[in-house]
Length: 107
Image (cartoon, rainbow, N blue to C red; front, side, top):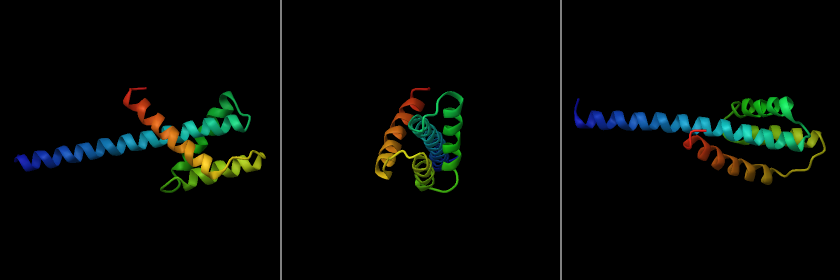
């Protein structure tokens, strides 16, 4: 195997690892957002955990954050809880940073 082949293989492994980290971080971010929204909806315990799973599943519907924002916005509005889309997107950013930190720390 040439040096170029080894280098290419190394880049492929790094890319795969980065994609796995990204997927895990986004799933954890969505779960954290789901728990935050669940609290605003008055859910706790198993109901909050189940809602957080719904948010994670909603994030898999399409690329980007629009599906998650749409779901939680609709759920909050249905319960009469006023949270802006901007605040939801801000929380997504905060929770993504938290998720990456937790994953890198092995949590």
